[in-house]
Length: 337
Image 1 (cartoon, rainbow, N blue to C red):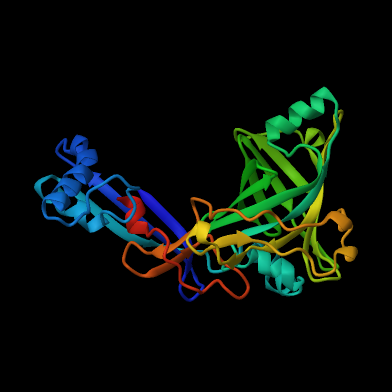
Image 2 (cartoon, helix red, strand yellow):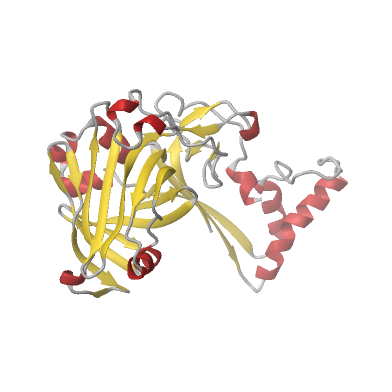
C-alpha cells in the first residue's frame, strides 16, 4: 500500500492511496514483475542500455501489464481530508479567525508543509534530566541551531517532524475535544488544553498517558508553551518543558518561516530555503547571528509529481509566491516502480 498526501495544482489538500492485492498464492511473484517489465522493455528497445540510475525507466502501467497472468490486482482511491485545520476545529471559528496571520498561515489545511528557521535550546545538565530528554526525544542544548518543522496533514490529524541541527523528534496531534488536542510522542500521549490570549496560543498539559494508561497529573511534565507573532509578522515559538522533582527538561524558542522554492541545479531546479526575519534586531534569538537555515535537498517525502490517477499533486513544497510552479522531479508512478 502506498499513500500520498499533499496539495494539488490548485493548492487544495489531497490524499490518495494505491494498493495491491495478490490472491491464489501469487504474492511471491510480485517482486519479479518489475524485472520482467524491464527485460521486456529491453527486448523491445524501449529502454537504453548502460549503467545509470534507475529513474524514469519504467512506468507503473508497464509493471501492471505483467500482472495479467496472475491473480494480482491494484486499486487507486481518493481519501477524505479534513474540512478545517486541526487548531480551528479545537478552538473554534471565531478564536481561529482572530489569530495573527502568521499563526493561521502555519496551521491552515493548505499551509506550507515545511518551515525552517533558527532556535536556541537550554536544558538541565543533570543525569535524570538528560535521561528524560532522551526518553521524550527532546533536543539537546545549543545556540543558533538551524531547525525545520514538517507538518504532514491527513484525515486523522497532523504529524509533526521537528529537526534541530539534524536531531529529529516526531509527534502526532489529533483532536480530542473542544479546545483540546492530544499529542503522541512514542508511547506517551499528552492532552493539551489550547488557550488563545492576546494573539498567542498556549498549550499547557492537561493530562498524560503511557501506552494508553492514565498517569497522575501531579507527575506530568509542565508545559509553558506558546506560539505567537512578533512585531515583524514572523511566526515565533517559545516552549519550556519541566517535570516535578526533575526540573527543566528543555526550553527552546525561535522563529520559523515557510520554506521557499529556489532554483538549484543540484535539486533538479528546486531547493528548500528559508528567509530570515527582515529586521533581525527585533528578534531576541541571537539577533546578530540570525541566519537562514542551510539550503537542503528536497526531502524524500517531498516532491512535485503526478497523482496515481494522473492529476497534478504537490507534496512537501509550498511557499508564499512559488508553490504553484510545476516541477519535473520524480513522479509518483516512478517511485512506485
